[in-house]
Length: 283
Ligand code: AMP
Image 1 (cartoon, helix red, strand yellow):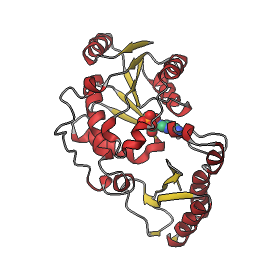
Image 2 (spheres, protein in one colour):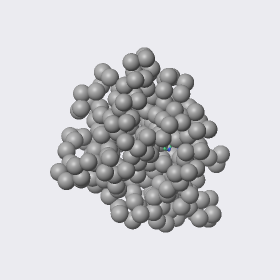
Image 3 (cartoon, protein in one colour):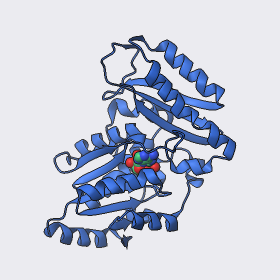
């Protein structure tokens, strides 16, 4: 695997590959890689002649400075895992390489409703930061296929919107890959390593609650089942930001389910100071 830190060097390499007819699959990450990330690398490897992963802990998407300070950095293990997953290139830029003009006056992306609900509501500015980094990465790499995890479903929708806004929708195809889970159901996340043993046990509650929604959702009002779900999280000592049933494509809250509308359950909750998110298609 090649490790590249400079964008111009990366572009020279990719231009050469493109001339030879290579298709380029891209997996953006913030490192602290786990099997969720490497499943995206594997999907890209199956569908492209060249797979490139990036590791950049993007400061502009952290609305909570403490979360950024505590974000795990495991670059040596990450390189090992990428090699083992047959990743071809790791792009590992520094902040100056990503933001040569600094953070001042970033572009504002019109994300509409997506920015005002759920993650958008609870993490103000987060998705603007995601777009800032993704815009730069897409401009540098110009992938044919972009691999994202359903684990961050709202982020997938935001990035699809970004791709439209910057006019790349005919060039980059977005592949949303399934969430990889621990054997007990907890969605894999770089933040899981911050959970102590007791917290780790209780953290499975978030997946259990989403499964409860999936198993017991019936046509009609969703109020009661959402109340139950909220109480289940409370019982497991979660501090809940949201537990929601939403339309899978518009993200509108579903007050009354007709039994047919495609819906998704989404949750974000703190286990002490570790914020976990998860989601599940309910039908
Ligand atoms: P992150 O490093 O958290 O920014 O995530 C990088 C990519 O990996 C994003 O597209 C995530 O949605 C995806 N990802 C994170 N966790 C998982 C998981 N458990 N299963 C599948 N994809 C994941």
